[in-house]
Length: 261
Image (tube, rainbow, N blue to C red; front, side):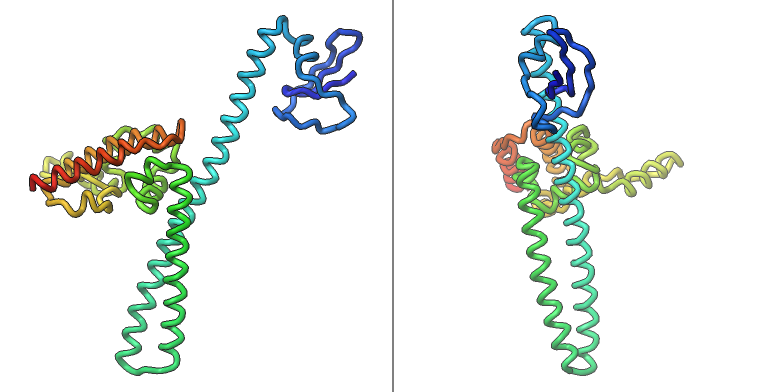
């Protein structure tokens, strides 16, 4: 008798286990004519019921963890691709606006009206793409979203490569991610014995909590925010549970620095 079980196919002849054929973990029976009995065959393969259920639990957790990671990677990639599309739309809109202004200075015509219609359509598309980024990031990284918003969080994911890689980064790296060129230039100058300023922030400078502060306060805010982002990324990757205290702490720190400035 051949059984289809969670670890593959098993041939059992007169209560003796014969050939064991490994297959991808799956609860679905590929051939409905094959009996599907987890416990009966499992107890014949393993020495005890306890060992059987321990192995079943371990394999089940591993399977669904890998499945969740594959799904997360697809969502990561989708958010990054949307961000690239948003950047392209911004460049296109800016280019068309400049060209339209040049044309209008020379002459008003039907063509200018058509270009304006296209610009209106592109701006509408941009808003839809941005909303989609917000929705995706909120789904896969609720804590990053609560601190940074969708677009800046997606920008961090793009620079890091994935949510997993971001979750593995220390706060000091997150603080300057996106400012690598400036960092390398500063290091090169220092090696030559020249004075150089190490960048205090990268992508997170786009956040209003950083860029709206006086220059002397931005480094402190960026450092504090990076520490909370590091925690948020790890929670998002490993559990996905929203911790509102993280974004609340960032806001309180911003308000504190703003009052002192």
